[in-house]
Length: 107
Image 1 (cartoon, one colour):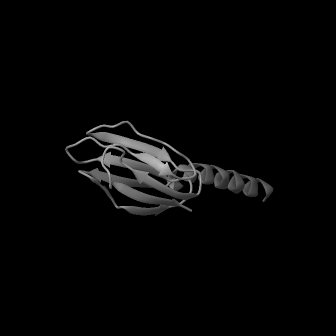
Image 2 (cartoon, helix red, strand yellow):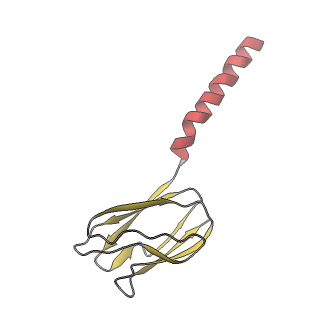
């Protein structure tokens, strides 16, 4: 009986370790010509957020205010990702297009 409990315990530990990466959340935000879609997003702490360029002109992703500042390169195509580990509200803009903004809340 002790051996069975030890085996079951080991199996449970391995199963839990394998499940952890599957729990990591991801969220993709589209960057179009002069807009972020969606313009307001709420994610949980630890979520990987990816911005994907889908328009025809160059943009960037810049945190104007928030718990952590970051900035992507200005580019016409591609993706930019960040795993957000600090809770709070991030005001994000494209610095080359006034009015192109979004709000990202991390809980």
